[in-house]
Image 1 (cartoon, rainbow, N blue to C red):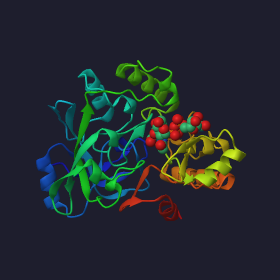
Image 2 (cartoon, helix red, strand yellow; image 1 turned 90 degrees about the vertical axis):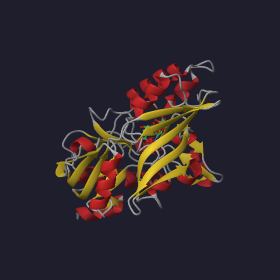
Image 3 (cartoon, rainbow, N blue to C red; image 1 turned 120 degrees about the vertical axis):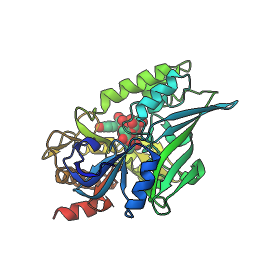
Length: 343
Ligand code: EPU
């Protein structure tokens, strides 16, 4: 097995220039077993690094999930598709549609791998992974055993799951999707509603791809990790007060007593679109995305994120929380901790 210090440039869509002490591309489960015996310390499992910000060099083992394979089981009502974690997400969406199994079309063009998709419960245009996920299979680095998680055990929330919390020692190796044969289009999001109730899955796919391409920068062209912040949830009374002061503010219903605000709108209205710190900038088409204009360092991105958070808080009294996962030398870190390390 080839274990070597490596550049992380190909493994983070922000395109930041850091290294990992050791890096292995994982292609078989046997390899996983022998690595587990050799490395007691928990490795960092990455897919395509499309939701990660490496804040410094990683002082450990990075495992790149390249496990491949798909298996379909058919029941009377649904197709169950078991997919290995290293498969590319968008290719899976295309493959399901080509094989006459619609359902995932609203999630087209989301960068990243299948294995990473449950961690933050990816979502877009009115659909979340949780709606189609039936099981997640993981390898627990603590016990060296595989575990199968039911959808209830995954504890999915808005960009959240058990894999960000109690189950951090679990590396996701496969995901099983349940695609009901009684397909229903999800057309609640503006540009999709225009398609009308008779819309086909292929039409939704096309429209989602066009919408994403118009707003969201392609990481192959302009480094980024998608939405940098979560859409903040505030108590409904605060949302109502903000709406009185700024009638154009987009407000969405959340859990009882809470409302979700559009972070991109708040950032734009705080005059931050296009603002740069070094090589990092607020995207001009979608203010929720921070981009690497070329040569950005982690310090540039972190300082820009801190500036965005501060200006939005000053103007609206709402504190944004990063959605991108930050990885420091020893593993997961957070914005304030990473900023403190810069000084
Ligand atoms: N808006 C602005 N200015 C901006 C950006 C947005 O005014 O610069 C307004 C829009 O006009 C709209 C509202 O804010 O009224 C929401 O914007 P949009 O529909 O673009 O979606 P979002 O809430 O900014 C979320 C997800 C995206 C997902 C889209 C579509 C999060 C953190 N982000 O973005 O997911 O593609 O909805 O469903 O929930 C990601 O997670 O990386 C991601 C890209």
